Image 1 (tube, helix red, strand yellow):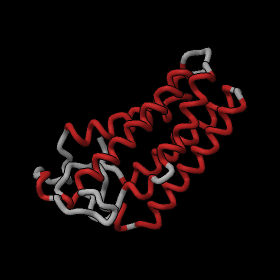
Image 2 (cartoon, one colour):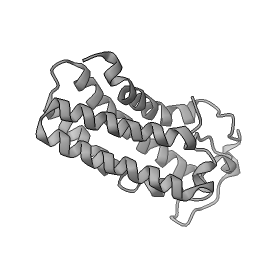
Image 3 (spheres, one colour):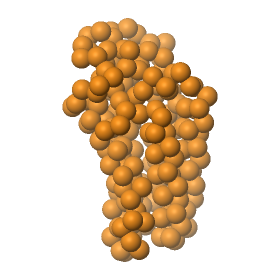
Image 4 (cartoon, helix red, strand yellow):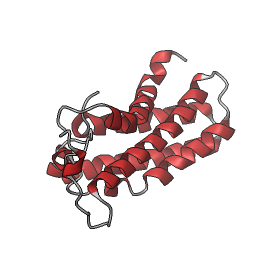
Length: 174
C-alpha cells in the first residue's frame, strides 16, 4: 500500500481533529470576534455558544475515531480490536449530526465557527451531504465487522470522501 492510498482519510481525520480545536483557537475570517454577541437560547434549550461548542466536541470525537482507524490501517498490521469499536463509534457520534447546525449557529452568531453560511442557505444540499456521510459511516461499520483490512480501507476512504465533499462547500478552509 502506498501513502497516497491513505491521503484522503488521513486528511479528513486531521480536519476533524482540527475542526474543534481550530474553531476555538483561531479566528476565522467569516466570524465575529465577540462571543458575547450570541447569548440567545435556541429551540433546543442550548445557547448559541453551547451549541457550537457541542458541535465542535462532536467533530473532535469523530476525529479521534478516524485517527484510530487511520493509524491502524497505516500500521501495516491493522488491529481489528481497535478498528471495530472506532468504526462503530462513528455512526453513534454522528447519528444526529444534522441537528448540530440549528439556525443561528453560523458565522452571523458572533461565535467563532468554521461553518459557512451555505449550510443554512442550501439546507437540502447540506442534508444530502450529511446523509451521504452517515450512509458511508454505516458501511464502514459493516466493513470493519468483516475483519478484512482491504474492505475497511475501501470503506474508510469512501467515508473520508464524504467528509471532503461536505467541507468543500460548507466549511471554511483551513
